[in-house]
Length: 96
Length: 98
Image (cartoon, rainbow over all chains, first blue to last red):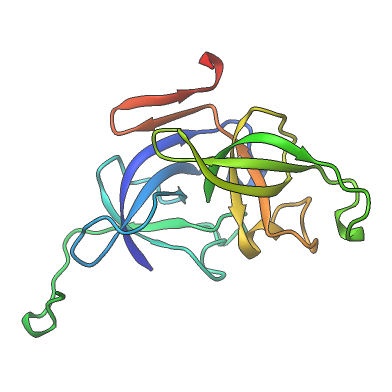
């Protein structure tokens, strides 16, 4: 899983049936210091509790990605799975 | 996933039998401000989209999870047609305003 920031939302009415009711948003991956890392990508958000500017974590590989909240299979390769409240690093493991 | 515009079609008669009857589109990816980038993807159309439409492409093994692309040699599939895109507070793309 990786950390990302929600940048925007996409509305798409005509889509794969298994994606109905699932919000689609644009996220910007972040590194451990919450600085931008890499290019923005499109991800689904079946938990639909995020809005723009929120710091979230997402899955982007393996079977975990294509499993919806009720376990149904979705054609998705990046999915937000939760919102981060705060991140705590132990002093001796502080990155950078 | 990627977002991009359908800029072309690939016609191929000699191909893997698994791809018989499938439309192959050339999708030019766009960045967050909807400007075309230099990366292209050839994706199988899984929902019936057309030329010049802004679409969302899923890649990798998840591309074989749609009804049409199950057990097919596909690693990129168009799964949605974009109606509108909002980044931050402003709307950067509106399908019917193009």
